[in-house]
Length: 115
Image (cartoon, rainbow, N blue to C red; front, side, top):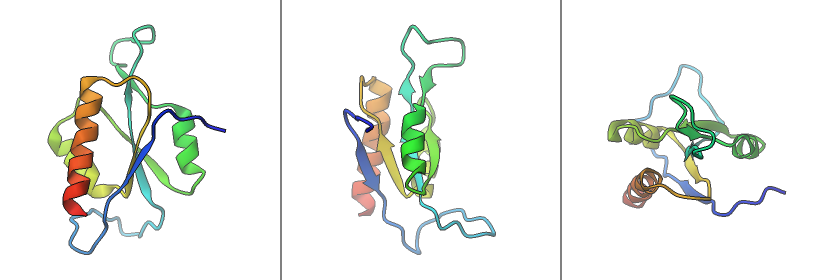
């Protein structure tokens, strides 16, 4: 059993007014974003400042959903584009950085606004 300290699943409302990008082939599987976490200092190497635990990816994929990493240290436009393209977000638990909380707050605020 996967033990998670904190998981918050935010489901965004999908309606016909959303400005979503669809491919020619319709995807019927939900797309769930998982927020990456800061890499512990003992793991850090150049250009490797965040990670996504494989257990979270496997857990979501086992439900039939597709996973998209939500990278930290990106622009608001990046986060807004992802928000409008995702069906839900998983926030892994553990130690939180200011950037992690900032991104989580953005997604939470946008979710409240559209629902």
